[in-house]
Structure formats: structure tokens, C-alpha cells
Image (cartoon, rainbow, N blue to C red; front, side):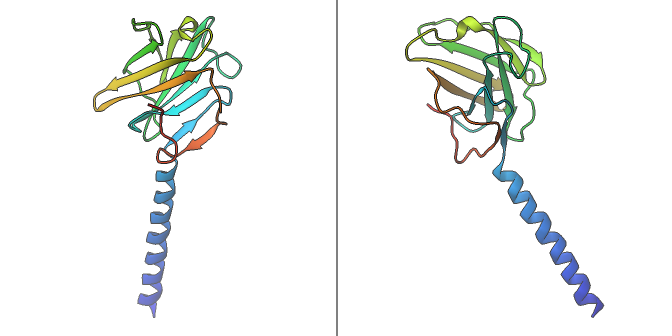
Amino acid sequence: MKSIITALAIFTILFTSISHSGQDDQHKFTKHFSGSLFQISDKGQVSIEVILDEKEYKVGNDMIGIVIHDIKDHDIEDAIVSVVATGNKDQIKVREKGGGLYLAPKTVLPDNGNRELKISVKKKNIDDSATFRFPASGALPAGKYNSETLKGTK
């Protein structure tokens, strides 16, 4: 009898831990700010969140913030981040602030019409990008997103 109870207890513990680990896999990326733009990169390796103003997070005058997280929702630091805007062949200078936050001048944002801002991230085994289209529409609320249901646009 004791062995049956022990076996049931072990089974319950194993089943509970397996079902919880599956739930973690469903929510890989977090959008932290309500007023930001958010995408999961084309290959699903990173999430990129663009902070356009200082309402929720201080990024500095005339700057935009770019928050980058890996598939485990950890900050991506010491990466090569490049930003290219439609109509501009040159890469915009991006500097790292720390904690997965990178800064770029606000002048990179398209001023009018249908434009794009492509943000690329390279670090060790990560080589991915996302393209943000302007004018932006369909802003997502802050929360968790699954890379299987929300892919970056190509």
C-alpha cells in the first residue's frame, strides 16, 4: 500500500512539473511597455521592442529605445545592433545602454508616408532581424507572446 501511495505521489509531482514546463515554452517573449512597438524577429530568435517616447521609460531627449530579449526572455547585451531606415543606405549609429537597451537617434524614425525601419541583431549564434512599418498600426498591449503565433514581418 505504501509503495502505491509513493508511486502516485511521484507520478503527481512529475506530471505537475512537466505540465508547468510546457506552459513556460508557450510564453517566450514579453512586451514590457504599452506604448511601444513590438515584434518577434523573422527567425524567432529575439524580440525587439521600440520605445518611441519617454512616457513609460526614460531613453533621453531625441532618442528611441530598442529593447532586445532572447528566446528565454533574457536581456541581449554586447550585441551588434544595426538600424536601417527606408531611403537611407547608411546604418544608424546605435549605442548600448545596458540591460538589453540600445539607443538610436529619433531622427531614424520615418517622418511621413509608408516607410520601414529594419533592426538587425547579431551575437554569437543569434543573427536575426525585424522590420517595423510606419505609420505603425495594431499596437499590442504589454504582455507575453508566443513566437509560433506572432512572427516578425518580412
